[in-house]
Length: 120
Image (tube, rainbow, N blue to C red; front, top):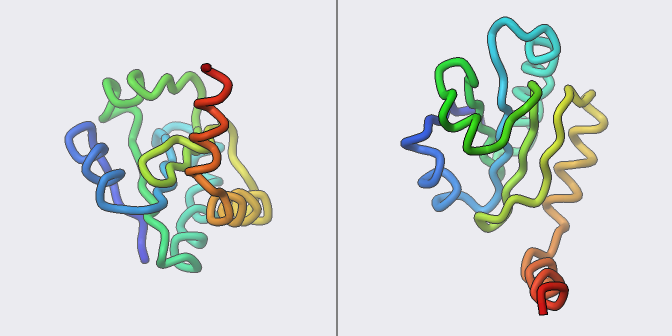
């Protein structure tokens, strides 16, 4: 599956409609972003069960600000509408695969239960 472009208007619906969403925050002028783009696209082709989305931080400044993006590229991963990974910097293909597998294997219900215990 190819990557999709998401906007502030489609962001919440994308999370609602998909179990796992990886989001690449990028800009056209960013060298590391351009280096990461084919790695991200390749992962999208290898993992059709995951939604791979891109946010152009120049066109979507309000969304980037809401997501607290301070450096690009920044990769975020959501599972069951919960942010489970956020890291600035371009990953290599191996690093991205490791993150993908970790997110697939993550038990979000257990994560939420542990977070609830910490707040209690």
